[in-house]
Image (cartoon, rainbow, N blue to C red; front, side, top):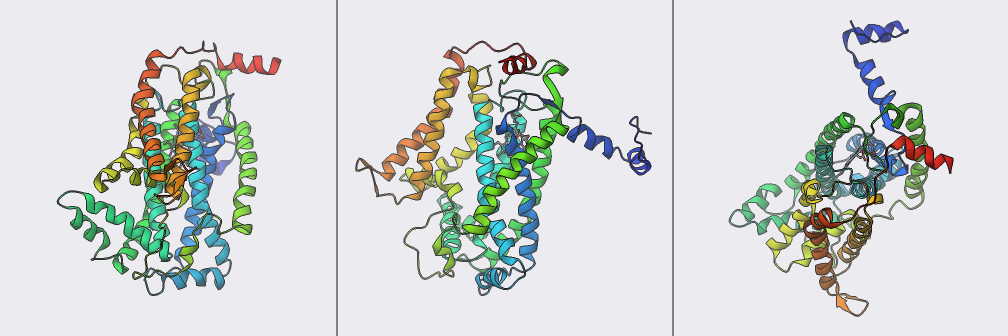
Length: 412
Ligand code: HEM
C-alpha cells in the first residue's frame, strides 16, 4: 500500500497498484524549485512543448506523405493544397523545426552562461548534447523528404562528406545511400529514420529530466539551495510562469506559421529534385550554418569533416574544460565578457555559413578567411580560454543563500 493518501478513490486505487500519481505529484506539483529562476529557465519546457507538437503534426503528415522520388514532392504539395488543414500541419511542422532549434540554442547558451553543466549536472548536460545530435540528424533527414532541389543536393553533399573517411569512405556512402546515388532507397530509409528518431529523442528527454530532478535546477546565482527557504513548489508558481512564457512564444511561432510560412525556408526547395541540375548555392537550414562554416574553413575535405564534428562533440567535455569552481557568469567578470564574445563568434560563423566562400567581408577578407578566424576562436574559447580562466580569474564573492538574495531584491 502506498503511504500517500488521496481523497479520490480511483486515484487511490491506481496509486496502491502503481505509485504513478505520487510520482507525478512529486515531479510536477510539489517538486522543489529554486525561488529565483528567471525567464531563461522557461526554454526547456518550451522545447518540450514544441517536441510534442512536432511529433503530433509529423504523425499526421506521415499519413499523407509518400516516400518515393516520383511522388514525394507532389505528395507534399497535395498535403498543403488538398488535405484538410494539411497546410496547417505542414507549416506547424516546418516552422516548428526552426523554433525547436531556436529554443534549444537559447537553452544551451543559458546553460553556458550560468554554468549549469558543472558538477553535479555534467550528465544532464551530456544527455542534452546527445539530444542536440539526435535533433540534428532528425532535421537533416526531414529536410530531404519534400524532395526539392535543396533536399536532394543537401543530402548529396552531406552524405558525400563521409567519402572523406580513409579506406572505407566510399563504401560507407554507398551503404548510407542504399545504392550509387541519392535515390529511392535513400529517401525511404531517411523517412524511416525521421519517424523513429523523435521517439528516441523523447526517451532522451525523459532521461534528461530524470537527471535534472536528481539534483534539481541550477539558478541564476549558481549557488546550491541549502534550506527549504531557498525553494518553492513547482506548482502553481512555475506552471504559471511557464504558461505565461508559452503564450508569448506561441504568438511568435504562429506569426510565422500563418503569415510568413516560408520565412526560414529556401526557394529552391519548391523546385522538384533534379539530379541533372545542381543549384548555384547549396545552403543548409539556418541552424546548421555555423557548422557548415567550420566545414568550409578547412581546405582539406577530411579535415573539414573532423573540425565540423569536433565543433559539436567538444560540448561533451565542456564540464571538464571549464575548471572554475564558480558557476554563474554573474560572479565571473572576465568569463562574462568571454561568453558574449563567444556568442558573437557563433553568430559570425552562422553568417559566414550563409555566404558563398569567395564573397568579400567588408572588402577586407574573403568569407573563407573570416570563417577560419571564427572557427579558430571557437576552439580557442573551449580549449584555451575556459581552462585558463578557471585558474586565474578573480571571481566576485558569492551570496550566502538564494533566500537572502531574493529577500534583498524585494526589499529594494
Ligand atoms: C528536446 C530538447 C530539450 C528539452 C525538451 C529539454 C528540457 C529541459 C527542461 C524542461 C529543463 C528544466 C527547465 C530549464 O532549465 O529550462 C532542462 C534543463 C537543462 N537542460 Fe535541457 N532540454 C533539451 C535540450 C537540451 C540540450 C541540447 C542541452 C545542452 C546541450 C540541455 C541542457 C540542459 C541543462 C544543463 C539543464 C539544467 C539547467 C539548470 O538547471 O540550470 N538541454 N531541459
